[in-house]
Length: 83
Image 1 (tube, rainbow, N blue to C red):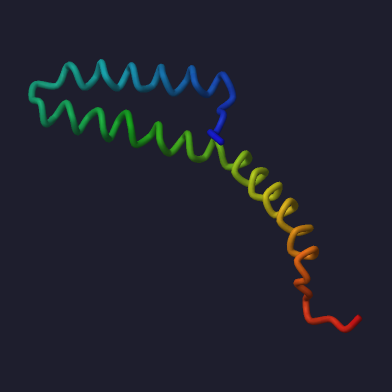
Image 2: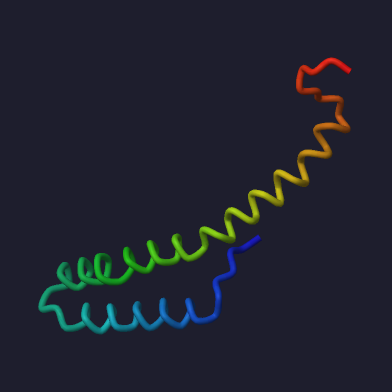
């Protein structure tokens, strides 16, 4: 299941990468272009995407735990408590 970003986040990330690409295109050397795009474009975009999807990851983990919990009880796992 893929992570789904809110629509405005897509626009901001694409716009940021476009600007970073234009900045990289103005660099005099290929190495400078690559470093500019990496450090001004990809790295910040990846951090923003990671932070922006934290709530979705937490929600997905909680749902997985809730789905697994009834299976564990049905399988006979007990928590050590006496009946």
